[in-house]
Amino acid sequence: MSERAGPYNQPQTMCPAFGSLRIGLRMRRTATVAVGSACCVYGLSFTGHFYGARRSIGYVPFDSESLVTGGLFEDVHQAVYELADPQHYDAIVVVNLCVPSASGVPLRLLPESINGVRVLPIDVPGFAVTTHAEAKDKLAAAMLKYARAEAESGPVKAPRSGRSQMPVVTLLGEMFPGDAVSIGRMLEPMGLAVGQVVPTREWRELYAALDCRVAAAIHPHYTATIAELEAAGRSAVPSAPVGREGTEAWLEAVGSACGVSSEAIEAAKAAALPAVEKAIAAAPVKGKVTISGYEGSELLVARLLVECGAEVCSVNTALPHTPWSEPDRKWLEDLGIQVRFRATLKDESAAIDRHKPDLAIGTTPLAQRAKERAIPGLYFTNLISARPLMGTAGPGSLAHVINAAIGYKERCNIMNDFFSGVGQGATAGIWPRLPHAPSVHANPAASLAADETGKGEGS
Image (cartoon, rainbow, N blue to C red; front, top):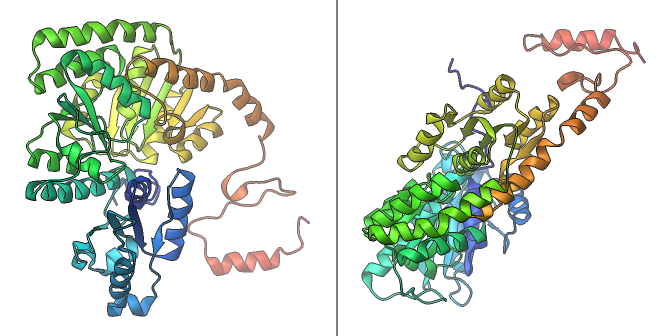
């Protein structure tokens, strides 16, 4: 049997479809339709609104008959036609979830546009797309491909803010809004400006994203998106301006890719690096930390924490190793820090047990396991990736939450002592007589007979 067999022995993530849905739900004039089981659509709608969705998710119900006879596709076709109102929408995103994807519901047969409204059908089943972060890349790439074909065939709309007078750098990956502003300030001495952040917030911004001098793979897993940019003649630069060393290397890489003079690159470094050094010095972090997550910025966070003085023991990410994660991987591993891609919950838990950190950053099940061991834990997605990382704002923002969490150690000890003896798993709770944990090899009939025989005991 494979070492990674089992439901928990795989990369931990939200439902992958959430990544694609999140993009559409945050875009202006974009409708989103999910094709899948009702329970899945309910959960995705709930999560979408929790994370600030701008509108509801459309849903096409189905049953076994409509699924196998082709009726579901006809229902989707009709729903998209009824929704395609150019007064309200620029695009409709139609997402196949697990059941219709496995059953072969052919969304690709939907028309490319209806009444001038673009139709983008994609399959995002959990058994084929590993993480929700990669599902973001899948839809962003599909949109860029469509927009590129439009731009190649004739004039297209400019973004609301107009075209930049300077060459721009497109940023790949969702990030804290202030990070784009920080990056823009760093680029100014080189005569460059920040362009669009992909995923975009409006369809017309896709054209501007393609109209760049170079793309910055802030999140290195946007491989399909990078392929579309390369097809448009644009190259990509890895890593991000995080920490002193990361900022220096990134400015050099961007300047070189854009053909900027060495004097201008040095001017940009001279303007940015002293301020970053000062911010790092003012935000010391002391303690052992393990880092896990599924957003794509895990290696960047680790780099910044190392420069702030933290002892980073290991870095685990659910995302794959790509050419654009290579500089960060090499930087960390040169310091003796283990980096694991496609990490499982088993990998992450083993890192906690091995290093016994002062703080574990990761997924919700990992944070739970850490707290069971009286180790403070933080959920990466909500508490780390939603903070600024770039430039001078990153060190102080990150140090504040990390130091506060490390300081919760005594609280964890108190809680651990308070709840000691209440059991766990099948024996959780307070029992007059401790029950036997069920065995995976137990005979169900024998267990039932034993329960009947023991009725009334221990009450």
